[in-house]
Every structure is written in C-alpha cells, then in structure tokens.
Image (cartoon, rainbow, N blue to C red; front, side, top):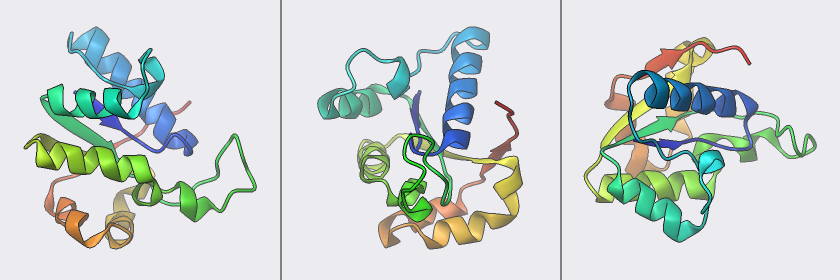
Length: 136
C-alpha cells in the first residue's frame, strides 16, 4: 500500500502516520510512506507506487504548513502539491486501486475538495471516501 499525502499539512501527516501504524502493525501489510523510507527520491516514489497493490490518497484542502506558517495555505492542499499529483497519476497509470481518505471534519467538504482537483483527476470524487478522525 502506498500512502500519498501533503507533507505540508499537519492533519494529513497525522492521518498518514496513523494509517501506516494500523496497516503495518494490525494488518501486517507492507506500506510505503515517505517519512518512513530511507530513499525518498522521485525514482523511489514512483517505484513504490507502481509496486503497491493500492494507493491511499489523503485528500486535504488548504492548511497551514507547520514548517513555514507564512506559506499560502492554498499551496499546501493535496491537489496543489506537485508530487501528490504525480503519485496519484502514477497509480492511475499503473492500474492501482485508489482509495481517497479525508479527515472526519472534511466529510461535508468533499465537493469543495474535488473542485480543486485537476480535470483528469476529478473522477476520484465518484469513489466512496473513507473519513477518519485522528487526534495528534
């Protein structure tokens, strides 16, 4: 399983870490999560996506980057991040199952989040989203 998320969004990081822990510890799955990998290069990311069985996309909207709080929050949203889009497109190209995940508090905002998606990725809005609540 490959977990894609915006590293500029603290809530996405919390969900990604929680999912990683659950999928590895509870289910015994091999999971690719950038912050857990020794090799975080573009080649390694693409390899991780293409070798995975499924791709979990943690979809987040505008958020404050904890490392650079003066950044425009819109630039930190999932669909604004270049590598989030690359990973998702690699997964689609490789025929991977895509599972969008959102924070529980964003459940009512799926339409708004998907409105920010590039045209070729808007079909993801038709997939049942999983909403999770995780405090961290």
